[in-house]
Each structure stands twice: as C-alpha cells, then as structure tokens.
Image 1 (cartoon, one colour):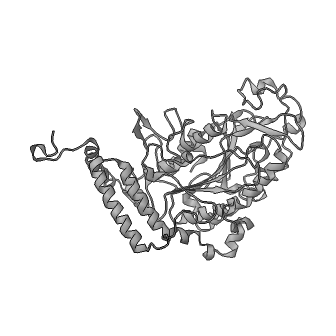
Image 2 (image 1 turned 180 degrees about the vertical axis):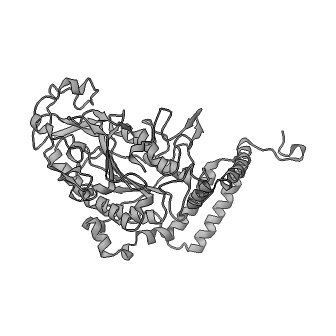
Image 3 (image 1 turned 135 degrees about the vertical axis):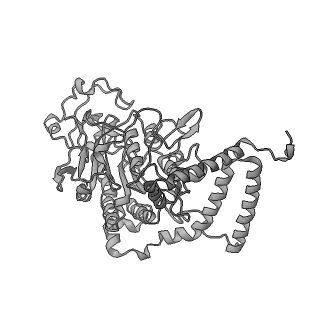
Length: 488
C-alpha cells in the first residue's frame, strides 16, 4: 500500500498503539472521575505523568530511599542476637542445622564448620526492646522508628546475581530496577531533576569491594528515560553541568531546539520510543544545569542539621553526604534515591573491617531518619536498609579471633525499613538459635518488593509490561505476597 492510498496516510503498528493508548487514557480518566479516592490519589501523584495515571489504591508513601549495603552485612553481628552461640563457640555446626545446604566454592571444601559467636555485645533499646549490637550505637536510638525484618531470604548465593535479584526481581541481567518501575508507573513530581538518582559512597572496610554495574539501576525494556542517573562522587555531580567555553545559554538552547526538531522528525518516520526518551533526556540535562547546583549547595543547611549526620557530611561522596543529598532529593520530589555502600564482604578479617563499615553508616542513618521525621517527610517516604543476603554463623576457614570471617548465607538475613506506613517499633520473623534457618514468618525478597510497592499504591502484579511473551513485573511470575504484619 502506498503512503497515501485511498486518500489516507498509512498507520504503522506503533502509531496504531499510540492512538489506542490515547483512547484507553480517556477511559481511565472517566474511571478516575467516578472514583473520588482514586482522584485524590491522582492529584497527589500528578495525574498523567506515569503510565498508571493514578495509583491502584490510596498510597501511604510517595517515594523511596534505598540504602543498599553491597557485599552482605553480617546480621549476626549487628541485629540478630543469638546468645546461645556463646556457649557453643568453636564447636561444630550440627549437620541437622545445615541440612545439606549448598555452599559457595569458598567454604565447600572445609572439613570443619566451627560456630563463631558474635564478639560484640548486644543490648535492648527503646520501648520495642529491639536488640542492636555495640557496633551501631546511633542506629540503636532509632529502633522505635524502625521495622526489623529478620527473615529475609533469597535463592541467590553469589553477589552479582543476588544484587541483581533484589534490585530487579531476576537473577539474570536485563530487567528494570525498582526505581525504573516506579518512575515508569508513577511519573515525576519534579521535572527539573531525574526521577531516579543513584549515589555511590566511599567506604572504609574491605578495600577490594565487589564491582557494581549500571544495569543495577537500568531501565531494561522500559523507556531509557526511566533509568537511574548516577551522580559522580567527586567534582561536579553531573558531567557538563556548565556550558562549554564559548557556548552561551542561548546558543545551547538553539542547539537543543534543533536537535529536538530533527529527533521529532525521525520519530515520525521510525516510531521508535527511544527517540522520545532521547529528547526527554536532552531537555532534562538542560534543566539540571540550574537544579543540580541548587540541590548540592548546602549553604541553606543549619549547623544542627549537618551535625545530625556527623562530620563526614562535609566530604562529598561519603555515605553521610549522600544521606543528606537523599533528604534534599526527597523534599524536591525525586521518586527513588539509591545509595550504594560497598565493602561488606567479610570472608575474613571481620573484626578489623566490620566496625569501620558500621562507623561509615551508623551516624548517617540516624541523621537521615531523624531529619526526615523532623520535617514531616518520613510519613510518606520509605527508607530501606539491607544487603543482598546474610552471613554464616560458622567461620569461613580457621576460627581465629583476629582473622575469622563469615561466608555467604541466603537462608536468612536482616533488613530494616522506616516510614511510609511501615509499622515502627516492630520486629518481624524469627530465625533459629543458630541464625541459620527461619523459624517463623519468612519474607522472600519478592515479598519485600511487593510490600514496598503496595505502600506506594501499586498492585505489584498489575504494573506490568508485555515483553518476550510474558507480562513482566518487578516480582516476576512466581508467587509473592504483601506482608500485612509489617504495614499499617
């Protein structure tokens, strides 16, 4: 058929879908108009900017700050107190406890699996009586604001697939991360900043930490405009924030207008949605020349606020600095902020490295939660803290006080959450006396992701995209559940 057959232009598949979606959008608006609860939620979330138009139900939260401890922090030495292990220190882990669990290549050849009791003292804190070790004195002050989940578990036993799994819902690379899904579904509250920001932190634990790849904050098969924007840890947070020498703002604007015209023309011909993402990213980059310098200018912060986060808050790229940035991003409407802190992979030298890691993050976590709460932001901001899996109760290699470490343990580990309608002062789930198996109330990482999405007003099975023959979702095709016991 020619381009103008029968007096009408031909319509390719993408054009047809675009027109169809417009019709569906009208139907959705009609449904929202008939449902005051949805209309209220839609107003809150800027109707029309996300693919959902409005949340599936009234949300408890608007945004997420994810504090990710890459390398797997030792729950046994931080949050999951096991006093009976002191009497069993150095004895063999019973076969009935390990029960044939597969091991990593780093400890599978061990002839002995001696129990390594935590060398750190634990105390109960707050009205909730949560146990926290001496490594985290500032986090201990927060326990009545936190929801502890002690029974997180995963199938992945090595770092990269485990981190990929908890970030994207699949061990195999290529799927969108949670931040991309939320950007896609709910849209943006601030068009002058990225909807999904990634911050990398310096660390003082294990120097040769596990590498992180940008696919962990990628958009997968979603439009590229929803991928995370990684700020630099030194210098300008974003490259090319300043106009090049000899290029004025007016010249740059004219160049962008010319590019937009060319890209729009190309899109009309090809119908490739990535072209529209490219236009959006160019325009966002231009707006960020004004918004990012204002974001990173701490002159407006009081001394009392800065002191909350500790002295490292003045050093760009530290975890403390990034936590303050996360609060500033939250109050500017950024949907998802991801802070990575590496160096938690203590296969050896645990007593030398773990205290430094905890010192990096302890005061800053206290500052972030306290700061958000004082500004009324914690109520609708979900803050999550955790890693990709836990650590073993037995020693990897010889049990020597100065050099011992712990291997990977996916069967149970601890995560905490604050804000966004999660029940404060709650400890959910129990592990056995060896901190090796789950005794009650298991929470798979899919369940955790489903629960976070639920608090944002999203049914995790209904935010989906048809790709490679499947209705793709963050939680995948296996059963996953919203954990009602930890939310209000």
